[in-house]
Amino acid sequence: MKTTTCHKIRLTGMILFSIFFLISCQKLLNPKPNDAITSDDAIQDGQGVEKAIIGSYHALQYSTYYGRNYLVMGDIATTNLVWTGTSPDYNQINNNAILADNLIVNGMWGTLYDAINRVNNVIVKLPGIGDMSETDKENAYGECYFLRGLHHFNLVRLWGAVPVKLNPTTGNLSDLQVARDPVEAVYNQVITDLTMAEKSLPVANATGRATQAAAKALLAKVYLTRYNMLKNNADLDSALLRANQLISDPTFTLLTDFNTLFTPNANRESIFEITFNAQDNNTLAVYYFTKLLSGRYEFAPTDTLINSFEAGDLRKNVSIRFDSAGSPYGYKYRDMTTGTDRVYVFRLAEIFLIRAEINIYKQGSASDIQADINKIRNRAGLANTAAGNYPSLMLALENERRHEFIFEGQRWFDLIRTDRAIVVLPNVKSRDQYLFPIPLAELEANTNPGMYQNPGY
Image (cartoon, rainbow, N blue to C red; front, side, top):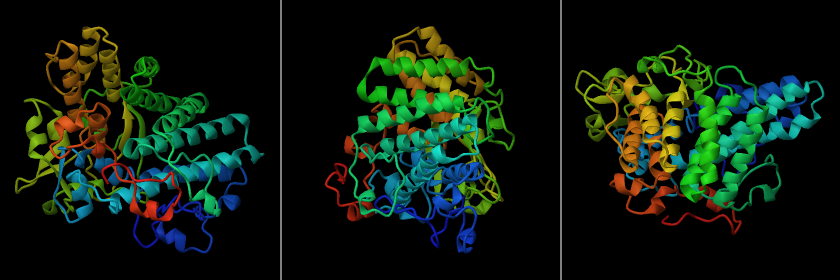
């Protein structure tokens, strides 16, 4: 969704979200638009619940979230992208030298808590809705818990200890003066929400809406990420259970042609994606394409990335192109006209690589690990991996994830999760840089002693 400064709602110190849904500038100017009214007015029956849930998915489309900045951040904070445009806030992230007043970081923080507040408004209203069947209510709870788990997971990965919000924000000052919850507590809540979602979500749903499979995919990633932090083998078992279930699910399959993933057609490799249309669009292609191609060219693939591809890797030409002047640009997002490129949150390729990583940590069968990595390599036109022992398999896996998920927002989190950022990224000199600064606006508005800045900022 396009967002503009004219009516963009940011969360400053856990924003008092008095208007429930901000869908567009034009709609906000209406006296009482249907999708921008208070939760008390909007969520009175099943139809209101459905509109509110759709509005909750809309938050994923914001340019401060999967519509651009959150997604781009996963690559521009690494050596995959270099800043080439006009916004110095991107350059701070590019140099791993982020200031607390960075507008992009502040926008992501605000949008994530806005998104959480939306689902919390639905959750608190659902018990009193009388015209919904128990099955429909259960599905609604599942979608809300999935989204809340996703948002809190993204928060804890970016900022570490963060406030866990389980109730809607009201006009009470106490709602704004909140402390950060410990990292382990955030992960525990994420897993609680996603476990409930896994049980409550439907098996099938509209494209762009959560299903049981989406909850399993996110749980697999959450458990794997928490294992990297706590080294609890039970987390590996929980992650492996979900990965195996997804890989054996006949609903999903690896596409034979990598390029097909980035065409308008829906596909069976997608487990959960953010969908866009001409009204609720993204600006990814505009920001990636060069000025010769009528783009903004805010960031570009690095020479390091371009030269890192093995000869014959089919993903290179799908992901990166060159304009007539020889300037490289990201090509996974191509719809310059209407901005309808899909954004993947999970696709089956990642589940194979998650399973491979789990089995490396569990010191499982080398041939099984190789088989999972090779499924991704062979689809890319590459020969089987030559890696044989666990350390070399881990490096092979890291390399495969880099090239498979370029511009899909994965690289930064991969390197942080495995503690490799300080080794791989030249601008990361301290593990303090693994976390982003708590936005200055939050610190100024939220005077709770438990709201403090991350080390190094």
